[in-house]
Every structure is written in structure tokens, then in C-alpha cells.
Length: 232
Ligand code: CDP
Image (tube, rainbow, N blue to C red; front, side, top):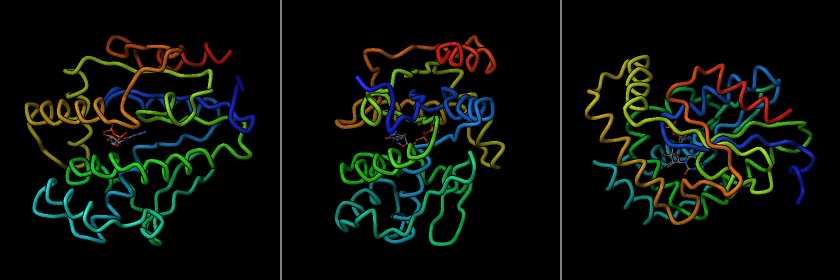
């Protein structure tokens, strides 16, 4: 078994929404000086670009129908994912879209892009391309250790109790100026968990050789230190 991809060590961080993957990944990135790739951010960028191209529909379901009928090629969406030192920047055309991809309208529509095999292959090839000329990389998502880099020996699965995940997501949305009740957030997270876990290809699953980390009772520093100790 090869220990890495193109001699690059890939730390795979998988887990459900709100398990702290992105925060842990950015801390690891600062500590190790390796780039952090947010695969969900790429799915979200493709979703936002599709919404701009075909309209967002009156509902997420209507968008899903539009998206499947239009058969847009991912390459035609004019999205670019660039690494600037250790930071990922997502572009649609020449626009850096920043936190726009985190708005609830994108979150409720991303599943249609994530369910599409052609789009998954497209995202996976972008993710693999980032290993070139890199010593190490931190990639977070749902299928990073199972599908994208199955040979990586550094696979982690972050779990957290659903109530903590909902509170974290409420705080994140509040920071973006979106006020939503905890009840609504919990039900949306449960729905997305179900969609992510039951997705035929690229669903959220635990790789056989994954290290499980329950982040409910740990500080972020504890989680990062655990991962770094495996690296040593
Ligand atoms: O940040 P959050 O946990 O809400 O989700 P994300 O990582 O931004 O991912 C958004 C969505 O993209 C997920 O709910 C999945 O449907 C999809 N996704 C995926 O299918 N595979 C990945 N490797 C990453 C995300």
C-alpha cells in the first residue's frame, strides 16, 4: 500500500455537519503549515454557480428538478478553486465568493450536486490535483478517507453529539447574521445527515482503518494534538 498520494501526506478528516472538521482542519493547517482543502466548500461553490446559471427555483426540490433537466457540465460553470499559500479561495468567474456559499439557500440545495456522480468525479479530481508538489495536505469532507484518498494512513472521523452540533451551527449562522431557531437547525441537520449517510456514492461512512474522535468533550486543541500525535 502506498503511504501517500504523489508522496504527499494527506490527513483525511471526515464527519457530519457541525462536527468541527473545518475548525480542526484550519488549526492543523496553521500548526503544520500545510494547505487545508474544504471539499464541502467546492460542492457549495458548484451549487452557487449552478443557482446563478439556472436559477435557484422556488424551493430546493424545484432547483433539484431544474438541475437534473439542464444537464450542465461542471467544467462549464466557470468555477476556480485556488490555493493561496495554505488558504483555499473559491471563485465564480473573477469573484471570490467567500461566505456566500454558507447561506441556507445553498445548504439546502447542495445535495443535488453532491448526489451527481459526474460532479463527484470532478470534485475528486480537483482534490487529488492539490497533492502535487505538496509535502502534506489536510482535506475535510464526507468521503475523503473512503473514496478520495483511501490509501492514506491518516484517516480521522470526527463525531459529536447532535445537540452540540446544532448549537455550533446556530452560532455560525448567527455570526453571518442569519437568525434561526435551534429546533429548525436541528431538523435541517438531521435531514442533511440522513442524505449524507445514505448517498449511494461518496456517502458519509467510516473507513475500516479510521481513527474515531468524539469532539463533544474535547477542546479544539485536544483534537488537534491527538491528530498530530498520530502523525508522529
Ligand atoms: O460545513 P458543513 O458540515 O455544513 O458541510 P460542508 O462540509 O460544507 O458540505 C456541504 C455538503 O456537501 C454536505 O452536506 C454534503 O452533501 C456535500 N459533501 C459531500 O458530498 N462530500 C464531501 N466530501 C463534502 C461535502
